[in-house]
Amino acid sequence: MRYLNLSGIVLATALTLTLAGCCCGGTDTETKIIEKQPVSTAPVGEELIKLKEARDKGAISEQEYEAAKKNLLKQ
Image 1 (cartoon, rainbow, N blue to C red):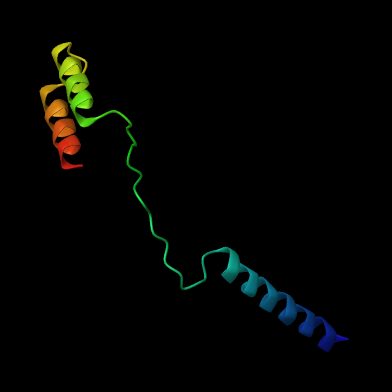
Image 2 (image 1 turned 30 degrees about the vertical axis):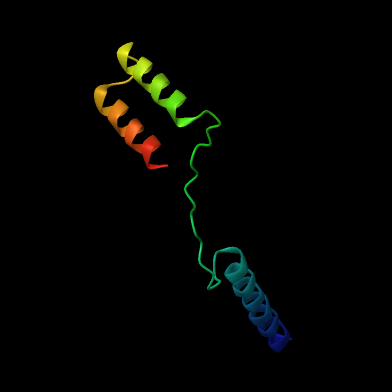
């Protein structure tokens, strides 16, 4: 009887460890995070005009304008 209880505990422990390895990232696969870029259908020139207008109206700062302009021209 004692042998049966001990084998049940060993079996339950082995099953738990196996499942924990599968569910808790126990695999050797890599996770890659891909940064999503906003998709714009407007031509770059139109986007630049909108950025300038936003800067002129005070909606964005000069630094934000320059960073966004640089990002747009990089595409």
